[in-house]
Image (tube, rainbow, N blue to C red; front, side):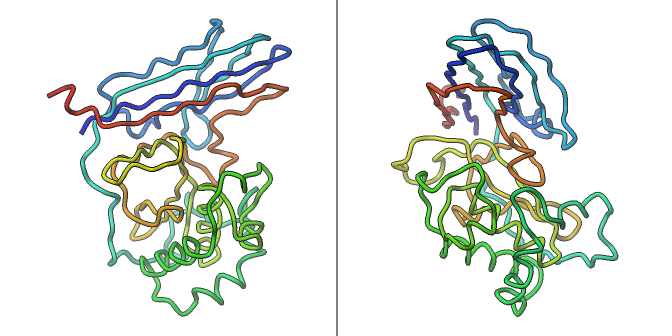
Length: 272
């Protein structure tokens, strides 16, 4: 399957502003690229690209004052297979975990392990460990949190989501991955493209999507508490402890979003 992905943003900046972008395909999937990305900024400005501490492709640029357009697109080869499900995957004892995954057991900006640990063990302590426990977490979050863009706010944490019972996709997955960390299961935040491929067309406008990954049987598996079903065509852009590390745009000054368009569609028939 070939998937055409891309986006177009419009910004209005009253003054020149420094911005960080993580609007690239993740380096781990570059071997799947069939039509390379081509990030374009209008008016033209210097783009400095680097890898952040989580291995995410990042660029730094200075947006001029006035109207700015940012555009990118690519074609990705992707297997027509949903997210892997492995009910036999087991938790790794803490003493046997690789040291590099321990940060994914701790609190972070949006994921308060200390505030939710007792709650997590009360809710899920009696569920079978391993895949079944993570799925129980996803089932609970999916059924207890109400989705709506009107519930989004940049300061909303996992504990806020638990108390308010509302949120957008990042909030669903912040809460789920925090519960997993509370249960001594390493979990990290991820985001990228997720189109309506293999499902009925959705009424909501296309957007980037958030999910999370857990470490079982010495490998990372994908879970998604927002949709709570294996999906086809998930394309990774960023990973991190939470949405701070995976923020797609970060501006250091005032900038107003004037246009936001994201697309992802199956174009296999165009290459047949």
